[in-house]
Length: 113
Image 1 (tube, one colour):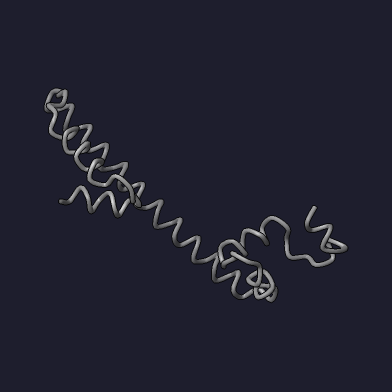
Image 2: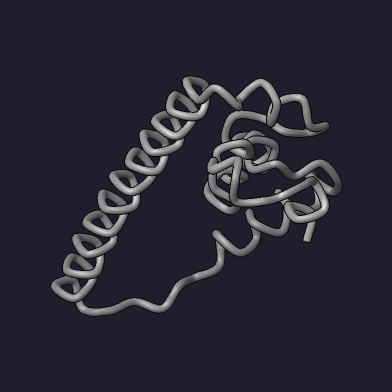
């Protein structure tokens, strides 16, 4: 069933069958209708919003890739990557928060604070 696949792809792990059944019931219920012209306008607006969302998602992915690339070229990247659970994007965020000026903090306690 396609609804189960959609739920799995969305990250659902528990009660997939119950969720799919609930969605199927909700989708089969008679929906309120508008005038055909109004429904067409709402449909066009939804498509325009989905296109904007798609463009924003692409831009966010490109920004994350650029941040990863910039972080990997930084001389302190291996140090930040040595932190448990740290990756390129997390490391870039660490640099954004604390900066990369080594003289800014006198010792590790200053960074920790």
